[in-house]
Length: 306
Image (cartoon, rainbow, N blue to C red):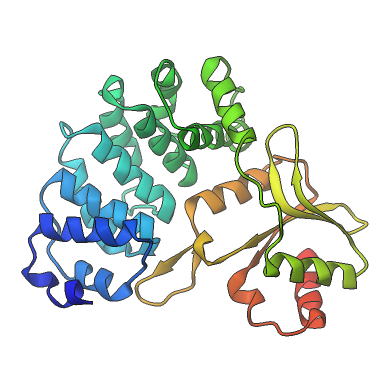
């Protein structure tokens, strides 16, 4: 609250540091972000990327500010690769689509000219971001060779796996092979899976039972797809994702919450055929928490499954 009140008196560097700290704490504060939106955008690539990273981490949408920050990034072709990668990651998380339709291609060309300087984390951030905004750019013509030999964290390899699946299922491109493909698949297979369902999962499962449907919890397939539950509607097996609040981005102006990049990407992949489900349904916390009884949830679920 104090930082929000004093925002106009802070330098761009000081504000970037405040945003980094708040985002690291996992706090989402619209008051602070509104104060940031009212300030002049920073001139340096490092500060602009930090602003963007904080918006992505807090999952707060501010499209006009993001476009202004991206314009700053585009002016610094010689800047550090990690700043470009962080800017792209934020755009992917927020599913931000600039008014300039060629922006991601231009930023990708900037990145391609310096790919050897990118760390494994930078490459995975850029790949999953571009997949999240459905931008098949020049980056994907060179990223696979660049990843070879890089050291990546397990989570970074999981991002690589998702980007691979997007190229395969949504773009119809050949399956990528080699060491990176093996490492990415291994990391994805090792991701943690909930051993117990949340109260929201339980409510949806109870409602499915009320409708006479069979439910399979936390289904995992050999090709890597996993879903919260699968409901056999007798007309086909439908994948159901029960998405809590942190699966969504929020508008500063109070607009409708929207799925974040990873959530939207996974939904799209399954709609495009990953997993072979008859349908894909998202049950969102905002809707579910307004329903009181099992009967209410069952009626809501039935409409979703139609």
